[in-house]
Amino acid sequence: MNEESTGMSIARSIVVRGMAVLAKVVLAMAVLATALPSAAQMPDKPKKITVLTNYAFFGRHAPLFTGVDKGYFREAGFDVQILPTTGSGFVNTAIDGNKADFALTDASVLVQSIAKGAKIQAFGVYLDISANGLASLQPIPSPESLLGRKIAAALTDSSRIVVPIIYNMKHLDASKLEWQAADPGTYFSLLLSGRVDVIAAAMDADRPALSKAAASQNKQVHFGAFADWGYDVFGIFLVTQAARIAAHPEEVKAFAAAVVKSVKYAIANPDEAARIMAEKNSTFNPEIVAAQWKASATAMQTDYVRKHGYGIATLDRLQRTISLARTALKIETELQPDQLFAQGLIAP
View: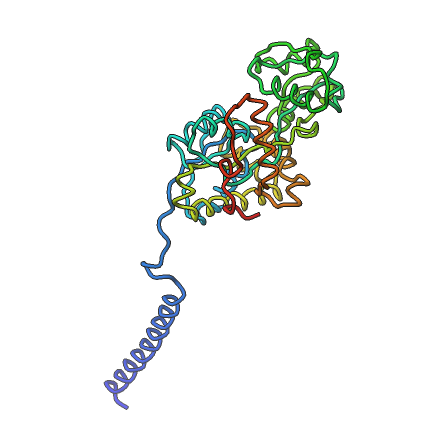
């Protein structure tokens, strides 16, 4: 074989091998093309939404940050911005005015807002029971144990309304309670200095930080939860515009599912959830956030939730929440459970 023939043979060999490789590449691309959706099938760009918390950020809101970090909301089709607020009244006004898309709000305040005409509606239960109660350096196992003790609470603090309702339910005389008006910013110092015996507090927002401050003085904090004393109302709801629920129920379902997934992950991984939240808020102490979140998680894992499923609201419990809220907030307008809560949008 001459040199030219040899060269042609080598060239043909290279071409054959090249064509074989090309064929494999084309085949692989064809397989990949069938495995991936076409441009027309690709999901739409995640929808930008704003989610409001029911107050300033603290451990109770760790699941929302966890859901963003883990991509649960993006998988559901949302690009979420989480914003803090000054309270549930602000939240309800913002949602009613279409200034935000979804929010967490106090169940009793939602009853009040809807009774006043707000076109908003709950679709899931975030916190099953109220986290509110009273804190003391001495045990307060029952409502009766408050008698003879000085209770610090702002004139607008909900405890001034809730405790008398509990007393009325138990046929006790609320006029015998001794209240002292105080600014919430002074509650801790008043209690730790012994100037009052009891302060209004939340078991998740306040108790961890108060316990840490008390421990530095070799003191122990005791907590009396209103929920344990018979104040059986839902705690925190997931809420949106009533019009959104009517027009876009699938969107609401998708958001609710992402929240449920986020909550369950945060409950299973509390320290990680706290770390994620603290990383997004540099002034936060991960240890305090974790303690707050663990306290919130207990209010999500009640006997009621174990029976009915996380996020679910039964008609009888909704009616009781409406009834107690109307009494507490002196609401004259009657409200039906279906006005307060849209069923079928959250799966436990």
